[in-house]
Length: 611
Image 1 (cartoon, rainbow, N blue to C red):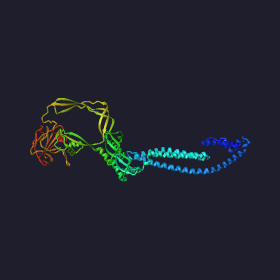
Image 2 (cartoon, rainbow, N blue to C red):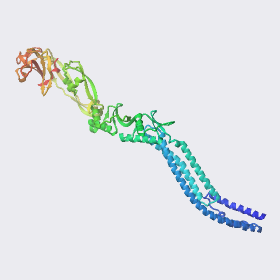
Image 3 (cartoon, rainbow, N blue to C red):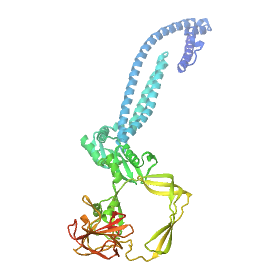
């Protein structure tokens, strides 16, 4: 019996030695099987038994019988284990589907919480930031949960596919338990990190530090923000907006009443002071016009350059600092029409000029020179009358462009160089007489200059270089030194009568009045405005009785509606001589003097010459 016991112990030892290579093979499936492993257990037993004495034969037979019994039982257990493997696969697949669904739910809650946990200036920006951060966070969670879970899963599947043994079953069970524990830890960390357990708590919404309402949870708050986003987009056709006063969220403690979603949404917009993103045209840093599309102001500015310079518009620039900026402004600000803005830029700015009255000026002449009407001058100068005097100052208000377009261009051109005039005094001529002794000639030069155009008109010119190709020759003029006779014209006219100005030079309705009318009593003295020779006396149509004096310097004066003529044709008169009496002959409505000044036969405004 002791021998038998010893033989049985040796057999057990041999069986354990056979199990050791198998366990190593499970641990490292890539290792190659040894010849010892490939041989069956009974052959190994026979080889070992052959070394023993004959006394252990009975024990050997008993051991062989037990090994056969174990072999048969292992075949049965192998079939049962295959069924267990199938059941385990189904359970594991269901388990991992459940894990995947839980992760998706966690992702949804994270997105909801992150959306409300971040306050941004605009709801769209808030949503974009949350979406991005949620995706990044989800990637980390997936890399930690799904990849590790998959690794455990593949490990368990690999173990199941291999030969089942007691050790393998233990490894499978332990791996599954480890996997469940890992998932539990991950879910606990996610819950703690994102406060998922508190998402369903009631939330107070504050705008600019002031509470405007309470919502059921942060999910409802998120829905209200999305509604605001949609309302703004539908009403103003833009997704770019912000609230001037920031939105904050705060958990509610104690008793509370849930606010109406629609009323809460309106309060958020009202208290938050909604600002819409627009495109503003600024001139010298000051905003003037707002547009919803930046292409509108760009086209206006391009059309402005084209108006003045056409094909050279790309070389033009603006005198003022003109910019198109993005700005958040009140939705109440009116958006401008392109045509209105274009006209406003060209004529929308008033420019005030001060003008000093000169000798002979009239309000009609001043208005005509400055592209104004007489009514415009009266409107800019309250209290002004037609009786203006030299030295008097008046304000002229002219429409000026808000934006000036400048073009600088370098040109080369030929310019005439005027001849110089040399005056030589002679004593055989009167002071009022002059004579050209030598005509002389103008010169020519090639000029290179920089020209600055302002709104299509030349504003400045700077000469860079000048090349003379023909020198000018001087003109010599002889001027007399003798005192002229008193009847010689002085070149300056005095008033022929002293009376009230009743009609000016220019249009009177449809007719053009070629002189001025001075109201005086019947029979008043009419004097020569300057020295000269009487050229005509007598009746002349609408003039009635008329006197014409030729001053022999290109000027003639007319005196009409006379009652009596006191001079004759060819008579020489001195400045201030009485030549007639006033009356109302011809086409006249009352006693007055009609006075004209003509230069080379062309009527002039007498008020420009009278002193």
